Length: 88
Image (cartoon, rainbow, N blue to C red; front, side, top):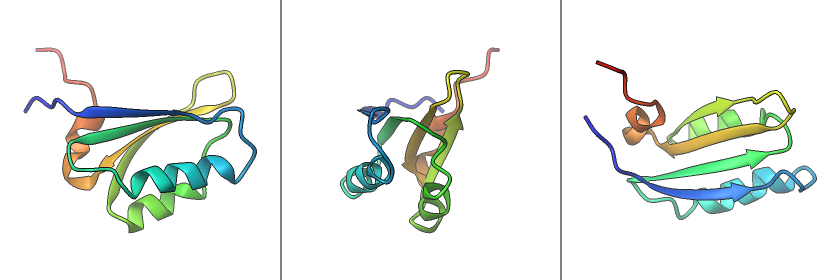
């Protein structure tokens, strides 16, 4: 199934803890089905992960080599959109 989801982007890499998590949670309060949030954080957002699970969100976490993290979040019903399509 092909997905066309709206992206919201947050670059939070310059913010001290706990601001990145707070801003992500604020944004998730208005995230609709069919939207994805892409957030760049200065560190792996470990405390956020169980909250996402409890609130019914799915996520993919990438940690590029420069020390920050990129987390993509959507509603659990849209979880298939977190992964790129497979080549035929």
